Amino acid sequence: MDNSHRYDVAVIGAGSAGLQAAQTLGRMHQSAIVISTDHYRNDPTGHMHNFLGHDGAPPAELRLAARKDAEAYDDVRFLDTTGAGVTRISGELGAFVLEIEGEPTVHARRVLLATGVRDTLPDVPGVAENFGDLVAHCPFCHGHEYAGTPIGILGAGAHVGAMASMLQPLSADRVVLTHGETPDEATRALLDRLGATVVTDPVAAVRRAEDRLVVTLADGTELTLGGMIVKTDWRQAAPFAEQLDLELSEVGAVVVDAFGRTSLPGVYAAGDLAQGPGLPMPMASVLVAASAGMMAAAACVQDAALARIA
Ligand SMILES: Cc1cc2nc3c(=O)[nH]c(=O)nc-3n(C[C@H](O)[C@H](O)[C@H](O)COP(=O)(O)OP(=O)(O)OC[C@H]3O[C@@H](n4cnc5c(N)ncnc54)[C@H](O)[C@@H]3O)c2cc1C
Image (cartoon, rainbow, N blue to C red; front, side, top):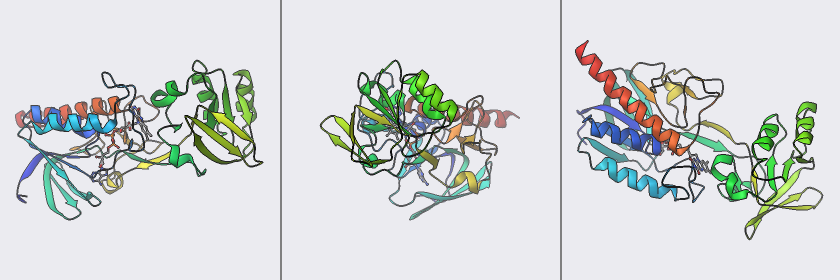
């Protein structure tokens, strides 16, 4: 790699946000480098839903097609790293420096963060093995596949009431598994009103049996479900928000304006790691991430153009 080259934009991440950003930058003849590791949030699942024209397709298939699209533009270059990827970003608008494990340093005028988030799953045996299939965190992504069957909802917080309500049109039979916890009175009353069953015994394990999920409770009782919704704890996949002292939202997402600009001039963010105006949390989906990638790339192009005529 030519160490002296300064790219217009360094895109970090090649999920749907980064790949769409790359295509937009390529079409506007911005020299862009797209740096990634090979880990994506939806790695655990073989099917991607709720994406126009690709409903049910493998996520890797979409990424491959999107990458080919972006590679067709002369100004876009991909750097696939095998280690930790980008480890440090420093500098300022016009002169950012990216340190990358095992690779020469990259210089860029602007940086577009598309590094996504990492999930931590509830510590119940069998949940990780079935995550992305019979266990899921997102009803929009997986709920339809559980429709008409008993659907489990793991947890006892206020969110389980909202989830039981959201899933009502998909199944009359919703089972809230509080895993040994006691929901507060308001949540309990809401679940009763919604006709959800509440099981308070701890969950010992879950396992697949053909196309169903069998839940074993601590006393040995078994329940058979069509699927189970869990809440994951997520955090930024990369350390850049901290390194660059970017403003974070209450839930730990990078705060961006409608165009994906962060609190630091020259740094943009798109995809699951970022939260736009008026939203309570990042709207985590492949389509929303791609759209945000396009917006942030467009902002890079526009901000550079305006700077040239200022
Ligand atoms: C189990 C599961 C199922 C899902 N199913 C669906 C679904 O059906 N439909 C749907 O719309 N959404 C689904 N989602 C949500 C979807 O996966 C995300 O919304 C989407 O992947 C976000 O894209 P992204 O580009 O922000 O991040 P990601 O796709 O996670 O990409 C992050 C990129 O950043 C790179 N990266 C991270 N750190 C570094 C670093 N330090 N250096 C270099 N590169 C780095 C990674 O290598 C990767 O290229 C699902 C999520 C999960 C967990």
